[in-house]
Image 1 (tube, rainbow, N blue to C red):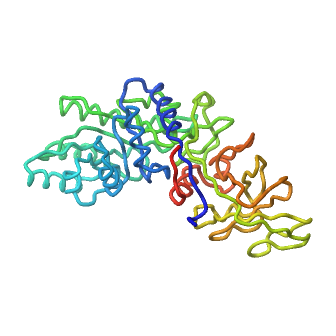
Image 2 (image 1 turned 135 degrees about the vertical axis):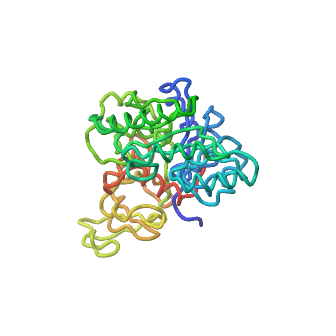
Image 3 (image 1 turned 30 degrees about the horizontal axis):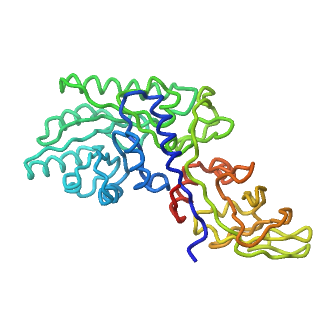
Length: 384
């Protein structure tokens, strides 16, 4: 048999979430972030559906991710956010590199000269994230040097918010003001407009001042609100603050991924019987324990040991004992008529019950991004 979990990916939910983005941003370009294999949802299928719906650009982290898309027949503009790699790839595959230091710009210019051509680039400014981008007092001098490099054409300018999901926008405002000053100076020097973008999902939803020329939604395309509401309240990838903007609760998003498996075996145990490593779960009554073919090797975190529920026949049932590499035990004593091969929902809806990536993230002290990328990347994916 294949490894246990199956991730069902709803492409109609992807389309719905994109339309939600489109309703917010109106006619401005959308740069769909499909890095990390579309957050574990499958970059090829997700990208093709997004392009069908009208996305202007795709964004990946590294050139290897862009290669996968090109090999699958994706011909749309692809922005490579982080990779400096082999500069020849940007020309051969017609990719848009993001320049975050002067050395990358030099390498691209030299290759452009060899090929007697030009490459369009986006330049990243570190306005306070402290990760990648031109930074410090040399920002404008470096930008000036890049504008003078033969074969390098600055098409876009971008930055990244450190905490766009907070109601307190003081730091985000500082970042945005810095970005505006640099953009205005650069556009004056070039005597033309540049495609400027800073807005990630959190900013798309709730930070109107950050809505510049284009938008870079990520997690919201996959059905999770980085600001939060009563049904789907999540932390942003870069912040664990509990301070949220209540206006964001009106955003209508549908989770794209459901993760399911089946009961591999059922075992009837007496009271006082230990379950799994370390005897951290001992039955308090005659119990029926289900074994599911899914463990931490499949992205089901060991922190879910005695600390998560799954759905069986429409009922929540708890994980019993420690999660193993390939197997996890669940207590199905109270589930009437339970049988081997019954469906088990890890993320998704069954009957009137729902478990989402946010719930699992809270139980394991992480963020839904990690839950989705871990489970989605290791499961057998089917598209529905």
